[in-house]
Image 1: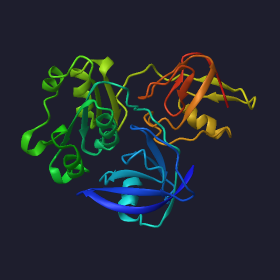
Image 2: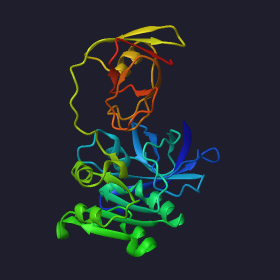
Image 3: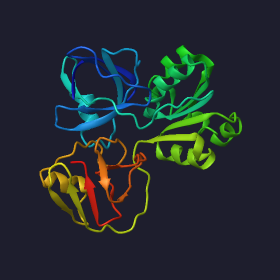
Length: 302
């Protein structure tokens, strides 16, 4: 973890604030567009937020937090109780949504889903790519960073106030794309589902607020061998791998517990994991919060 000091809190929409976190002990860990951090809050909760500042500013991170009326305690604490000057621990950045090289980009953002797009658009423009951001929200007043983006990038940014104009026509946007363009989408489930329906899968990159609904076979028990400690852990059908390891005294860091943030990644040395995450685990890796085993035994690097 890295220690930061909350330097600024700015209201960037009617129900959203941006937080500027300054490194307490010098430069912070480097990051690239699409990365996020875990923010450890004083109420013992940890939440994940996309970095939306400038990667070149190594002395500070910027994130944005929307006040969710159904908050589980994270956004509510940020909006009601967090004050400047507070010391806050953050994780090193992780990037499950990296910006790949391309001559043309279409960035699609819905609401607070604009946060990873802010540094992505900057990087694309600086690289000389043909880049467009289509940014949808109920109204301009509810869209964080709308004015900043419009002032900086002009016609590259198309703001769509859905109360007045309806939702963006993604099919029309798909028809106008060049053959080598990549599409990046972050927003509510309705937006990401429509994007997956109209854009070719090999050109589309999606980051979700919540995991997509999936169907799996019923849970079965499996055994985990921890290679470094020599301990064996039984994982019953009603318990996650993450919880079984924690209960056995082999704790694994975890944030979202929904398979979207990547904080609980572990290395698999033997056996066949059943991947249930929304990230797409690399070979030899799995996410302990949701994924299970297709083989009766896994050997983990723990």
